[in-house]
Image (spheres, rainbow, N blue to C red):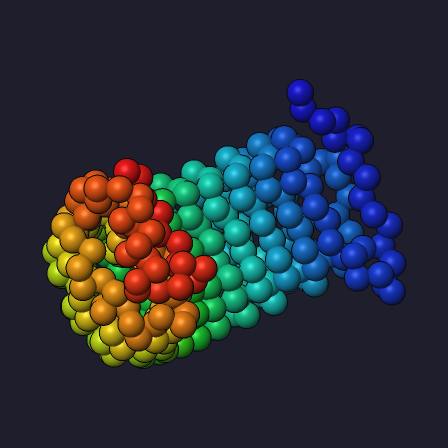
Length: 334
């Protein structure tokens, strides 16, 4: 049942109370804002999970606005056209248009201080329009769309998070200028080859559910802390010896037959190896000897080496012989 618009209580504005500058209208199922007061001093306006198909023109006058969320509404390309002329909002720092009906990157060039821009879960087929987005941007989210190519992002020198998961990307390209990038999320695409273009500062990379057959390409990412490569076609662990800061390595659901090239990973805490083709536990203890003090979890279930262990006693003996059992959780389904 829809809430009555009249029942929405907007806090009285108090210049000494920072909370009075925030208006949260999430999940009211509003079709418009006609009966809602919009105080001119608002700094944050959250309209998540409503039924809005147009933008209330009064928003254009909120000159103090820093954050605007229209997540999960019915906003179309035509509905967001007015944004490009709302000069009073030039200081906006966060714009969320996630989960709407957009087909294109909207013109947000008016926002010259934008830090966060989210257009995930739409119907966008191209990054055309990103060239007009301010070079101040630190976080860009375009997941769950239909994007075919990474382009028009080379001016984002301050970008720290790039989310392009669940698109139709085939090639990693045009990343070389993102020298401050910390997180790169490219899961659920069609990428076959790793090309990180010298992203030396990056800390998290996800390439899950792609078409990789090799792990090479990460050697220069010496600051990397988390690497997610599950659900690919990788048959060999390689190119990892330089990743001395790695804490999490997920290579589950691949075609691995052995554990290799991780002896230098002294900071490794989580190692996901489940759903591979590792036939024997032999050699695993030696492979992880470098991270013995840090390692807390190994996942090995759904490998031949687990299915053919002849008893739980044998497994426990193996653990006691190699690590302190209190430091390692070996998740196995016999």
